[in-house]
Image (spheres, rainbow, N blue to C red):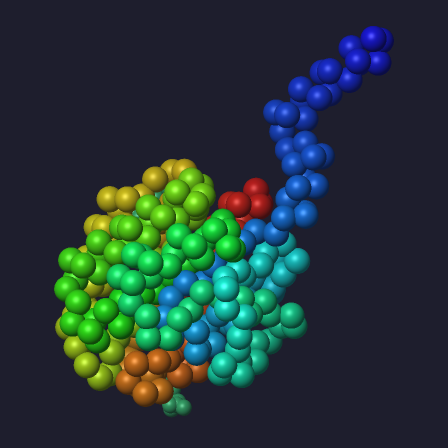
Length: 236
Ligand SMILES: *[C@@H]1O[C@H](CO)[C@@H](O)[C@H](O)[C@H]1NC(C)=O
Ligand SMILES: *[C@@H]1O[C@H](CO)[C@@H](O)[C@H](O)[C@H]1NC(C)=O
């Protein structure tokens, strides 16, 4: 009885701030970041270069990449050790198909706290309309929030095409800011990584995929936004 009455105020105090239990949970559970996309996510090196930014900022042991894929098809060589290669990049896949048929299960298998995505290039190649791609984006955000109401989201402006219909990429990118603002919320923020402005088609190795210079551009646009989300999520 006597001991309980002494401990109760302490227990209440630890609920008000980050108590020992919460800190322990945070250590056991790394922050989960899903790189989501098509071949521009799968067979490229920007994921590795963004990992370098996380590791160089001291977060390597507190974060992880998640997804059903675990590969390094480009044989990327980040500066830092122990790059987590997990991702959800699927070469050739459309935003529309991912939204309609896959994302729900992916987020069930590998839950995430942060999703960063670039999608739409293959939809453009298949002649899908900007409206249909934006509708797929909305569906994806709804799926992300159903999986985790506090999902933090980074949406990339799509890199330019050196071959094919770059005007359709521009049309999609032009829609993204207002779309993102319309769905933005305090609980589940959406920020835009501008991977288009200043990205030259000479930064593509084959008219579609970034070469190393393009990978560095993408990493330089995505990484700082991800770091800000990581700091917020870890309460730093
Ligand atoms: C969403 O809101 C956050 C602040 O909560 C802001 O930093 C961010 O820029 C907003 N995103 C868009 C696309 O307006
Ligand atoms: C990659 O892009 C840079 C910048 O445009 C260019 O100088 C370089 O030659 C390209 N490298 C390859 C392998 O295409």
